[in-house]
Image (cartoon, rainbow, N blue to C red; front, side, top):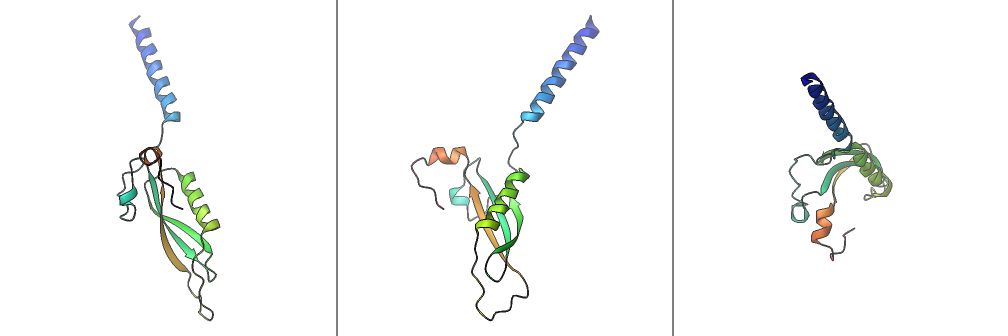
Length: 126
């Protein structure tokens, strides 16, 4: 009887642990917030610092994540993809040689739920 009780308890604990692992929400990494975003950062916000390589026309040819507090790789891929599709830098002047790619750093903030609750009337900056 005692053995059956131990088996039942072990089964319940293992099923609870396996059920939790699939639905567990990823936590943000404890990385210091960049000084550019410190005035507008709230707990739950996500931020990313990217390095962009620009061609002679100012279009992004490559994107690299330098720092972030987000752990979701797919979200970071979408962030780089958005920069590659939408970001335009300054084109090089006529006659300037584009021997090496230019590198630019950008910092982006993705507001969380707490951010929107504290500033519901504030228009979003684009």
